[in-house]
Length: 208
Ligand SMILES: Cc1cc2nc3c(=O)[nH]c(=O)nc-3n(C[C@H](O)[C@H](O)[C@H](O)COP(=O)(O)O)c2cc1C
Figure 1: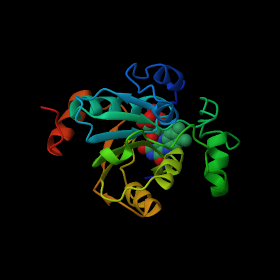
Figure 2: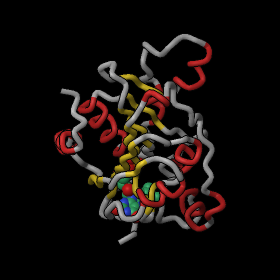
Figure 3: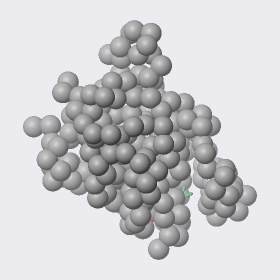
Figure 4: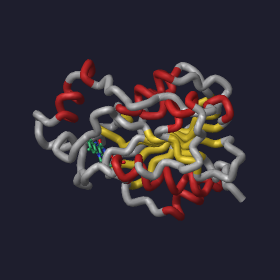
């Protein structure tokens, strides 16, 4: 079903995540603008990128486990105005997320950056998001719309309390209009690093 249920949104971990920026971020002024949201945990091959949006940390955990297993770089989608726990309260009809859900024109969330350093160097992009009312949390949309996925294999993944991944990957593929979008993978909000690593293995993306 599409009902919001189960886990309670906790405080956003965005601020903490952003302080984890790679100290090896390139120093050139051109790279500065795009390096902000990128964290290089990779083995230097730089072929796989894990992009994610996470409002309360679950998708972030899965994304980091995926990047670790694949030796991939990470890019976090960050709204200019991050969602507070109050914003995420779907049981309140007047909360930010409820208002955005009820009025599609409010879902065009401004992001701190949609530009990934060395975007052309990635041939596989994993893109992760929480499920909100049965679809990808809409801060993900702005990133997808802003980038050209031509020539890339794109693999969606989500975390959700009870829903499946449903049509969310297909909707993002339609929004992108480019890229070879694969079937996506749904994880429970509490998915273990091991589950994530074995999925990376199934995809043939394991670092070793
Ligand atoms: C506004 C909102 C709507 C949600 N809608 C659904 C839903 O339709 N189905 C579901 O299984 N979980 C739903 N959830 C639960 C989240 O998908 C789940 O907790 C997810 O792991 C959160 O990821 P995050 O911590 O990365 O933000 C919703 C959560 C929020 C905040």
